[in-house]
Image 1 (cartoon, rainbow, N blue to C red):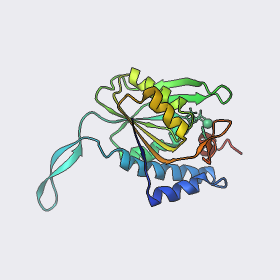
Image 2 (image 1 turned 30 degrees about the vertical axis):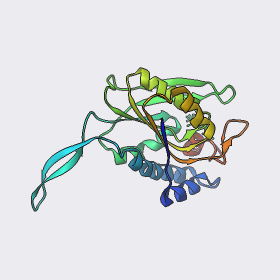
Image 3 (image 1 turned 90 degrees about the vertical axis):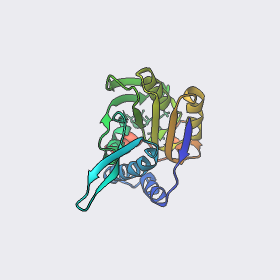
Image 4 (image 1 turned 120 degrees about the horizontal axis):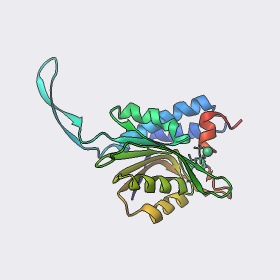
Amino acid sequence: MRTHAVSHPLIDHKLTQLRRVETTSNTFRDLTRELVSLLAYEASSSMPTEDLQIQTPVAPMTGTTLAGPKPLVVPILRAGLGMLDGMTAMIPTAEVGFLGMARDEETLNIVTYAERLPDDLTGRQVFVLDPMLATGGTLAEAVRFLQRAGAAKITCICLLAAPEGIQRLEREVGELDIELFVAAVDERLNEKSYIVPGLGDAGDRLYGLAE
Ligand SMILES: O=P(O)(O)OC[C@H]1O[C@H](OP(=O)(O)OP(=O)(O)O)[C@H](O)[C@@H]1O
Ligand SMILES: O=c1cc[nH]c(=O)[nH]1
Ligand SMILES: [Mg+2]
């Protein structure tokens, strides 16, 4: 597994606004979309391309187009859904699959309650979207699920990670071909396994159930 903590003035600025307790759901959704587009730019840098012959209004030329089977974007419901638009805006040719997973806040066990993926994942780059990598239980389970479904090349995009979650991913699925892109690695988890300083419950902040 290769982990990239992406540092950029725009990402750092938007992430700070996202974290603020007074940021409303509407603004939170806008910032999430913008942040994901910036992270997608980094996370897609190794996508395969091929030459494409085109005609401009002035001359013929050899341009570039994305190659290979269509990439697949998989948001982990619920909070990952807030990242989908920002991702498909950057990679409009991507197909979208869904995984519904929730962390039981008492036991921290992961419940997979929905799954809708294409039949054939062979050779496809799979982008997994989830804003929060806390204990790592959810993302590790998602990666295992996708691997069992045939995915070989998996790129995870998260907004925030705790060091404990990255270590767990390394431990449990680190031998697979996985890249992890995060906007920031925070200090630690608290006694409820929330990221500190973090941003709270991403799903609640996106979809307005926090108040
Ligand atoms: O790394 P972990 O300790 O597994 O925690 C991270 C998970 O918690 C949040 O989802 P949650 O379970 O709250 O579901 P939601 O998106 O429906 O709110 C978050 O979006 C991750 O999926
Ligand atoms: O800090 C955290 C941890 C898990 N899930 C969240 O939404 N936030
Ligand atoms: Mg939640």
